[in-house]
Image (tube, rainbow, N blue to C red; front, side, top):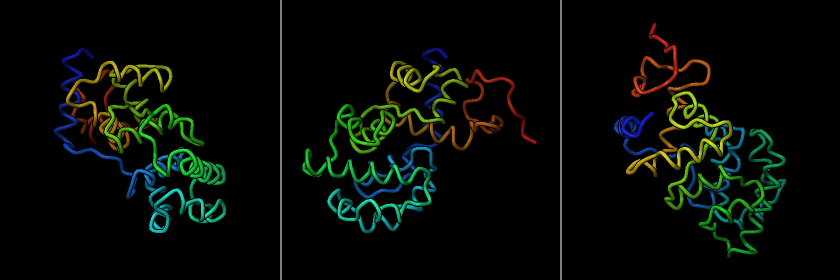
Length: 212
């Protein structure tokens, strides 16, 4: 895609969904961090079900540490890799209390030093909590970037760097939400619904599905 096509690509996605946001449910920045850590290799729907009762009880790192690993496991046992995730959430909560006065740092590099927090997780937190223009490349964005020709790359980081270079204003803040939602509900992995895609004519993917 050229510059004009990329602008039109995001203009249409923005027109279709003017206020995109994460589908994870949370009440504060700490809960967002926990939810994103839990969402690795899990669906947002599944995470929301597991955290509904948890987040009513636990709103701070201190409360999470007091709940403990076993207590947390009881809440998140329906989520994949819950044993490892529970240990990581307790460990990162302890670090937040010890080193950051219980606050989530607004720094991507610092966030990635926390247990269970990779670059993708840090990018989500920076974007959703601190309004940073970051691009959290999950499987949906990786697929959409490569399939459409918007941002091709063999690794998530390569796709992220392409998006960083190519996404124009005023779409940079919401870009990763639009791409995730587009990949989740329209540009699906096995059966992309090209017949109802608002950017189909800008997309490099061939052949395109037809509505039956």
